[in-house]
Image 1 (cartoon, one colour):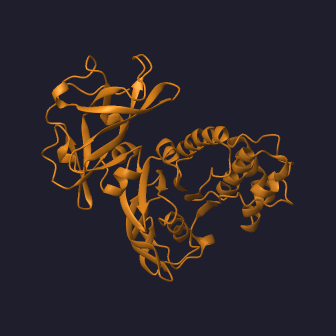
Image 2 (cartoon, one colour):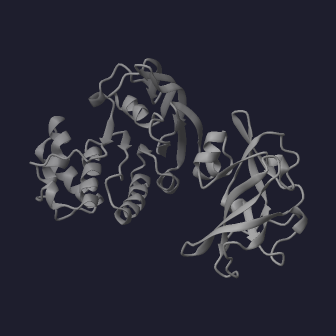
Image 3 (tube, helix red, strand yellow):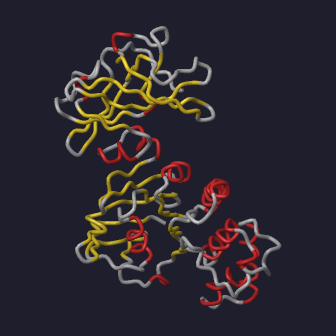
Length: 358
């Protein structure tokens, strides 16, 4: 099902939860609403569900406005963060609840619940109660219950927040495979970048009630549209006066920029080329990250008479660096802030060879 949101506004007193939000979700897409706390993610989800009414704007499912429809008439399934399972009901009864409300026949209910138990990997657990299941299993029951009435749109509010890290990773993969198999349009809320990137076909980045950018995870990571997105997505260092860095004199004087770890090469004079395009820096921290070293360096800030702190990575195959060691820092590119937009700027002094991503 295609979803169109047009100029949506919603306030709670003096707090603007949604400010002129517009976006389109194509049918069958798995879309993540990503942003920090208070960015308006859950408010949008609740307006899609009919649990909140917008102050202005419109929501269309397949080209038809649903603002006048109650939640039960919108053809949605909703999975809450805390599962919201009925503790006094068995797993079978929990999944069948919506079907009984909709007056499905007993044979239809049995067939549909059996199908969903198999789909969610819960065979053999139909007679158990929620307290007898693990967190991951309870979340699968919540998914099955939401899917039972065959909704056209599935809404998930922080679906993995209450689950431990290992199970969360397993459920992410399971969710993506299941949604792809079913082909149901799905919108989920998260503040976890890794979760959004791993699961979503598209991401909507929200900040202070405004939509900052919509795109694929790769598009948003490689081509951030706004300074907020550039600083929020990935590991970033925001610096002042980027025009003072070697190779970036074309940057506007007094501007700001974001430098990500993968934009850097940190090493000795034998390892960095060309030296003329590199800054001289000092290693201030070294951390083992399993498959690589994380290196923190400081490079001079001539304008502020101080030092800029940057973070990069280094392969385990290269000689280990030590805190206090002088190194070269080659910055291949940066994201330059241009008002409320960003621009990717390449180091004009470096050779044409591609940077080494480690």
